[in-house]
Image (cartoon, rainbow, N blue to C red; front, side):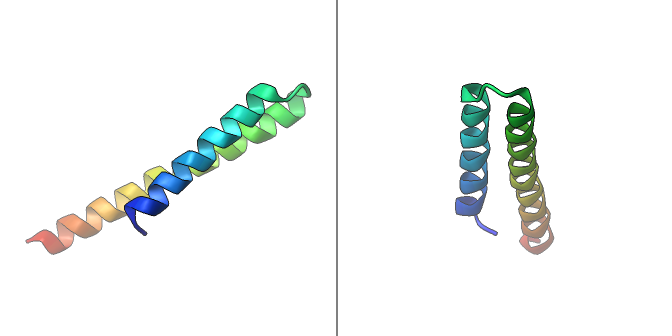
Length: 59
Protein backbone atom coordinates (compact mmCIF):
# COMPACT_ATOMS: atom_id res chain seq x y z
CA UNK A 1 0.00 0.00 0.00
CA UNK A 2 1.19 3.48 -0.74
CA UNK A 3 1.07 6.93 0.75
CA UNK A 4 -1.84 7.58 -1.60
CA UNK A 5 -3.76 4.75 0.07
CA UNK A 6 -3.06 6.14 3.53
CA UNK A 7 -4.25 9.57 2.44
CA UNK A 8 -7.42 8.09 0.98
CA UNK A 9 -8.10 6.15 4.19
CA UNK A 10 -7.69 9.31 6.27
CA UNK A 11 -9.95 11.24 3.89
CA UNK A 12 -12.63 8.57 4.21
CA UNK A 13 -12.35 8.77 8.01
CA UNK A 14 -12.79 12.54 7.93
CA UNK A 15 -15.82 12.26 5.66
CA UNK A 16 -17.38 9.76 8.09
CA UNK A 17 -16.76 12.14 11.00
CA UNK A 18 -18.40 14.97 9.05
CA UNK A 19 -21.42 12.80 8.31
CA UNK A 20 -21.63 11.88 11.99
CA UNK A 21 -21.81 15.57 12.89
CA UNK A 22 -24.62 16.17 10.42
CA UNK A 23 -26.84 13.25 11.35
CA UNK A 24 -29.67 13.55 13.84
CA UNK A 25 -30.19 9.95 14.93
CA UNK A 26 -27.74 8.81 17.62
CA UNK A 27 -27.55 5.30 16.16
CA UNK A 28 -26.52 6.73 12.79
CA UNK A 29 -23.95 8.99 14.44
CA UNK A 30 -22.45 5.99 16.25
CA UNK A 31 -22.29 4.02 13.02
CA UNK A 32 -20.50 6.86 11.19
CA UNK A 33 -18.03 7.23 14.06
CA UNK A 34 -17.33 3.49 14.05
CA UNK A 35 -16.65 3.68 10.32
CA UNK A 36 -14.34 6.65 10.89
CA UNK A 37 -12.46 4.66 13.53
CA UNK A 38 -12.13 1.71 11.14
CA UNK A 39 -10.75 3.92 8.36
CA UNK A 40 -8.32 5.54 10.80
CA UNK A 41 -7.12 2.15 12.03
CA UNK A 42 -6.63 1.01 8.44
CA UNK A 43 -4.51 4.08 7.74
CA UNK A 44 -2.45 3.57 10.90
CA UNK A 45 -1.95 -0.15 10.24
CA UNK A 46 -0.89 0.59 6.68
CA UNK A 47 1.64 3.17 7.87
CA UNK A 48 2.98 0.74 10.45
CA UNK A 49 3.37 -2.07 7.90
CA UNK A 50 5.04 0.26 5.42
CA UNK A 51 7.47 1.49 8.08
CA UNK A 52 8.33 -2.07 9.06
CA UNK A 53 8.81 -3.00 5.39
CA UNK A 54 11.03 0.04 4.78
CA UNK A 55 13.09 -0.69 7.90
CA UNK A 56 13.56 -4.32 6.86
CA UNK A 57 14.77 -3.46 3.38
CA UNK A 58 16.72 -0.30 4.23
CA UNK A 59 19.75 -2.12 5.49
